[in-house]
Image (cartoon, rainbow, N blue to C red; front, side, top):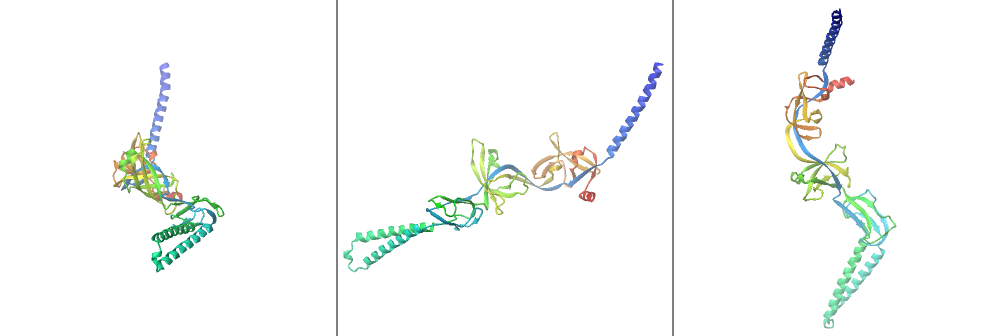
Length: 354
């Protein structure tokens, strides 16, 4: 009786297990037949460069602090901060009445001495004129001319002019202020070309050369690069930081950059030409191994690859793939080797949106 009871209970359980297994097989078959939508791109050939990323501080190679060469009341100011000025342009005018009086007096002294010299030279009885007297008058004339030239220079310096082409960065005085001799009046910078100051590890010294290309970005998120070049390379390594100084020439005709800014810099070291490239976003990193999913008919095959240089969203593939093959660029995170896929084209996406 007990054996018959056990048989009665065992048979239903066996039937249930068999039905569950059949159900799982059917679900698995359905899952295998489900195609995963992906986007692809064709493997191309192109140029990829290697870059070293760092930061740089921008400096103005041309700058000038304009000072007053004479003391006096500032009569007028012709420029304001932000104004672009040319070399020799008048920036301010200082009252020069006192200097003009000195100039008039000096000119009069020169004329008196010149008249005396001319009178003595025209005398018929030159034996009554000592050589010492003539020499003294000539020396006095030279001293008077020098004094006149100095007074004339001071009158000229009452018109404060710009020593360089540039932009007024700071104005230190106002009209009506008293200008002191050698007192600060203006600060002018020329930002048409800036210098990017970079400090690189000493290991990079052998990789740099004059004229080497670099890209400058005005912030960390910007993708619009400004093309610069290596202008100077310091041959000295700082023993404390282990770095050496590199100066970049950064064009700035459109005034996008300003002196004093911190920028992101990418120095181009080398370029591999006519190599296989794919979008960097197509790569899958698993166990520190790089792989791509390559379309083979209706399936996506996982293929390990070796990468080289990376430039932006483009990466060089050294081995593992050939030009013309289709690689998955979107949806690869959901794939396994030999997964069934459905390739979605941009036209299909546009039709779906409409």
